[in-house]
Length: 447
Image 1 (cartoon, helix red, strand yellow):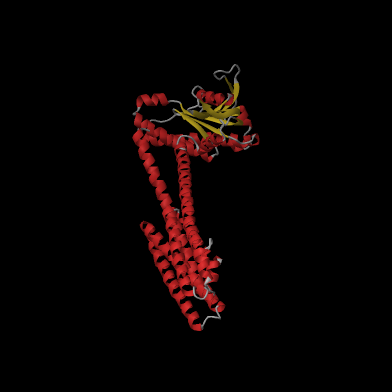
Image 2 (cartoon, one colour):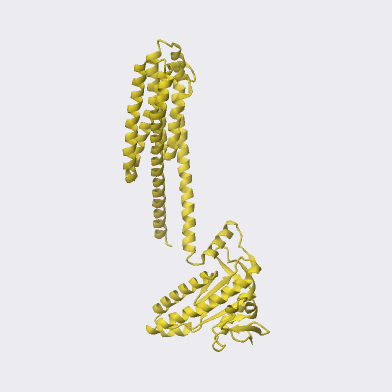
């Protein structure tokens, strides 16, 4: 990948992450709107009757006026949220506009509640009580907006609304309760301290939102890169080996293990001749079709493709499993070999009709111990299986070229493990063959 391609991919990744974050912000805003709508409904149908019940000392006229004020404001708020929710659900581009309006509406509702509590009790009780913490809830709720600007705006707006509420109460009750002046304007826990507190909470929550957004971006990049690696890597190795390698990488080792299973080698015996006689593009297309069908058969029977080497396929049955499953693995490998031969014959019949090349395949199957792991240098490694059983399977496949009418050769160990009588159908009598690199012949069965 050159520098330009890398830059383009980085920009695409940035756009993808930005879109994902904006989508999450949009979803969070819709959730906040639902919560705010629920609070407004609660205020109308639960808090209002409680207000009438808790204010017997207020004249019925004042009580009714207070309830009417709460009812009208919250009905307007509920109507706004219903319409705004529908609009925002269908248009994400209006998110920033609605966020500002929503914060303003939230502060307005809390101010209304603050005023009604003041009507129930008195100014000094309200100003010295914990009712101001309702504004803090609004600031904290804005954390889900993941916006530094929204947090700052929320903190400043809460401070302004609280200031106006306090000034109104001082104006109304200052004569009745002179100590209000000392508490709100002079005391260290009074008006100015709380205003500074609201703004400070806004700044702190804004910083937390900014940090949370950065963490979300890091997690998104990591998840994207992991998914990208898995998708790309999965095109070159089987999903099982891909996950095995990635797991070994996370564990910071080369995943060196000793396994006991079945190795299957399949190769096209006449592939060199085919390349000499037929157009290479057509042959490569046939080869890809061949590999696709073979991979489906191997995966269906529980095998794992270790690698493609030229026209050769190396597959493993029983990777990471116990030796108790050897009989099952041998039957799966033999069944796979038979199905691969049948599928190749079917493809050859079709290719003959198109005057294309036909494939003559040979398959070798052996059972035994082998070593698995990531082999190579520091900059590049390859997952592979090593051992005598691997060499035997490869040599058996190569031997199919010289054994008459044999397309599949399996070792006696594999054949003896076949418990089902049907799995042994088609095999001839055992024979001794001498493999390259071996001093003594081994007993094999041909199909």
